[in-house]
Image 1 (spheres, rainbow, N blue to C red):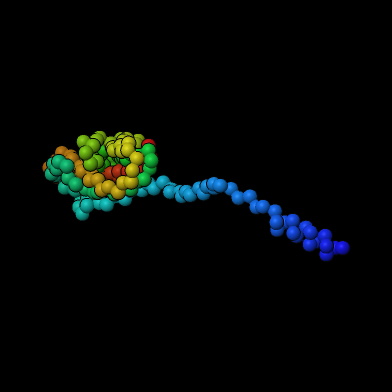
Image 2 (cartoon, rainbow, N blue to C red):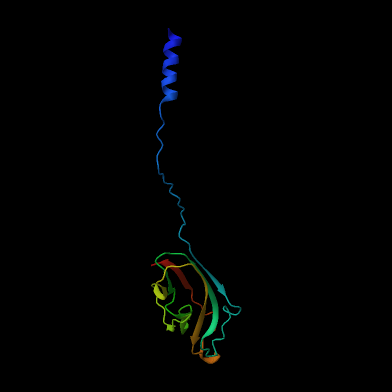
Length: 157
């Protein structure tokens, strides 16, 4: 009897029509993370400026900017000494900095925008950094090392 019931159930399953869909979908997707980076590449001589000369747009570095931000990006710049090469508290030589086509910037100790890219895309760009200052005869400058630290930041818009 068990064999007969089992055979009947099996026959009804095998003979039952199978319903298949007439359409199906497959979602394909991938994820790309945001890339934002910069590398400051100093030019030879950036650390031995002639403070008795008066250079205009002297190239001191190149900054490599890499971004794939969908909102674009900006470059921020600030100076530890507010655009002054300082010899401790003894003396200073003021300067302006140009970042690419930004024109002369007098930096402050807070970030200011030196470049803004507002179009989405992928970027791998080298931008020149130039310095301008009015030098003085050595006899008018206090002996010592004059320096400033400039900080560059890349940020998505």
